[in-house]
Length: 171
Image 1 (cartoon, helix red, strand yellow):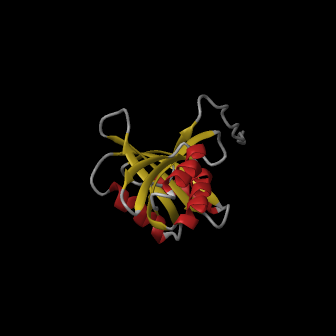
Image 2 (cartoon, helix red, strand yellow):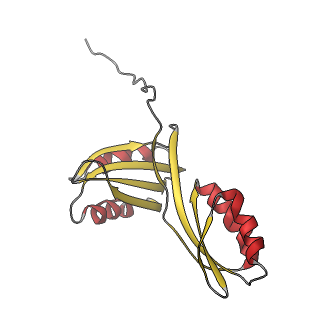
């Protein structure tokens, strides 16, 4: 089960290493990870896309992340309404004859050409991962020479209703 987890952390040396080490020790496969500073100095936000094979392990994952010394807040945003984006740079083979055709392929994706050489184009595209996958599939016939992707970065949309937590009151 693919999960999108965000963690707000202190921006200090070794945080990323400690968190990825913890995930690795517990056999969670990290599909992608992005890290960047926030509007608050000294605070960063991490977005993990992890494969969690057992739904019962999701709570364990968030609890283990919360135990990390530099972690301030952890959210599993998989089930929420979210904004998510990824960036990809794709180098495709091209000739002067195929450039216009490639331009026609990338235009509906709002992708753009960043670099042109005699035998290739470098294309930039941002969007949801499935949009990027669709463009990659369409570019394969031209010959993908190189590609890099940033991984998903995401956060919840606007104000969302709180989840009601059940609890039992002992008397």
